[in-house]
Image (cartoon, rainbow, N blue to C red; front, side, top):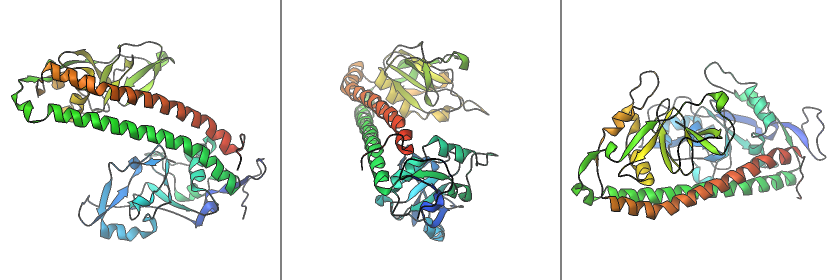
Length: 381
């Protein structure tokens, strides 16, 4: 059943396959083309490109479509175990469907692949991370509006695949690293959710009604970030924080940690707590002065504000710091704010430790992946 498609030398026991060769009946389909209006009643949840991230399925922002619309797309109705591959926008992001999503469906920008039992679905997922496969995909995309890979091109991607036993052994090694990374990320989500729940309990309860009124500027002062031309963005220990988060590293810093930053232009609404010295880029605002607020209190206060509603831009979304400063707010007692900081700061120290550990594991995985997936490094099976 070997379908060799090119003559490149491979390790013993490996063969070249086209993607279509590993698919049940050689078939792959994309999902619902016209989902219609969002509906909650008599509806089915549908996964979109934004739900497929880092090899996982994120179900926190899911579209729902009417059941009669979904019924026209039985071929992509999920049962669990399928490989999802994004084909529009961020092309080639993959995730394996858990059985808990049985009965869900997908949108047009996602293809649903059912892998033959003699191939390890996890191994095929890792194939999409290889530089050679990425090159094949983006070399065939239609980029008139955004990268788009049609199903014919997707089915013709070429993979190098070993025996089933070696596929499973490689997937076990890479999967164990991914599972640890995912566990650390989930733990961080839980820790931050606990701190946010405590913030709302302490500062949004009935007791808050007796606090004096003020404005956000009574709590903190925001400042625009600093210009940093691309040619000056050198490697270094300090993160560069843009409107979307860490966008690089620099050998100088502009702010001593801990700090809080939010998007100023382009993308507004994200809020970041930075536990190390950093360079706030000119697309961001950062807390220049903590008045009544402390770093964690400032972080959660800014997160509770509807920052996109302050958009002062026309073509490019822009956040004016003065509009944020003038927002009415209640002023809690300083001792309560400090007690919140002391209670929750250990949680965020743990979050930072987990982030560092996850970064190390990610680096290890990214180093091992091409070596294992090419047969350069072999594993016992």
